[in-house]
Length: 435
Image 1 (spheres, helix red, strand yellow):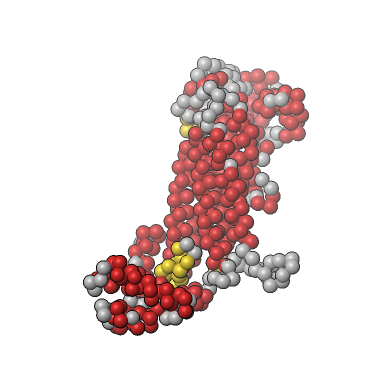
Image 2 (spheres, helix red, strand yellow):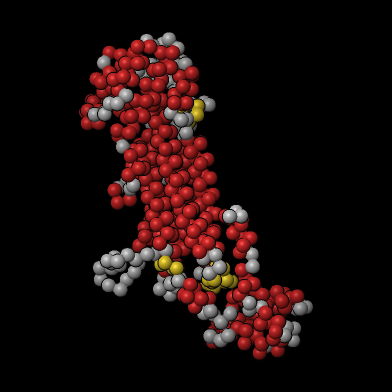
């Protein structure tokens, strides 16, 4: 997590002061419920809130204490006692460190998910606007990087919209799965704390109760959360890679916005490079790289060990901050993307109409030729077109075996470009709805 690839709102979730604030709220809410249950004095619970509700925790002091205690939660509780006074002895009654740490991580990840969902919403809006703008802009579809059949640029973007719409649903589900609270004490048996404390803290922190914890919240939840971030990152990369390919000089159908004064190369002043989408490819790799450690965190020893802890202290902030930045950057790329319909037309016409080969193939089978014969007839004319730069329709009209079954008028009708776009409206309704 470095400033270059960070945005303030997401970074703020992971700052020490924010983390200690959540720790305090968990402890104070738990003490409130303990007071209600008669376990601790009500006056003590009130004093804890009164003295620390608006406190700015001294991060340096907590770090100083931790250098001695070698335990972060104890260091925090010691500092909290310095603020609250004698009543602090009623804090953390019956609780274990994981109750605080795991519940805090759940709060942080849930808040991070809210930001990521908002990021995806902004991206979806940008993609939708550009998709409708180019709903019927013809371009060549490619398979294996080779010309296939015509699509529209709007359809390319509609596919991206549907993909990120699924990403949004996954993030919503991931947030729901991760947003659980465990205040169950050592090894999760509630031996020294009433389950009603957990229910109270969960409600106050916007979480649900973890049905059964050990001394930790089960890490399959975290694995699913980070796996979801990895999928979203892969979708970012897919669209970024498409744009990178379209910006290649030999294609040049779309291009990242190149701002006044921007420089593409320290050596070659003419360069306009796809630096933003290349950057997105790299950021996606980073987010995906954090998925495997999250999966490996699932298998902890017995009721608890801390092999997961160091991993999550790093991947929690790094994965969410990086993906937040990547989604915002991709939104900017899409919003300002330069699109060149004239180059799309030039590329579409580059192979002399070869993209109509399937229509001719199907027409020959309908006219009585076997599929094998039809394929052979079309392919030999297609290869002649490929190799000599000729016109596909002209070659077909000159082939007596073809014209024995299809007239010149029949063949010309098969080169109607609109044929390929007759269901664009249907696809758009499926993706975007009636609007």
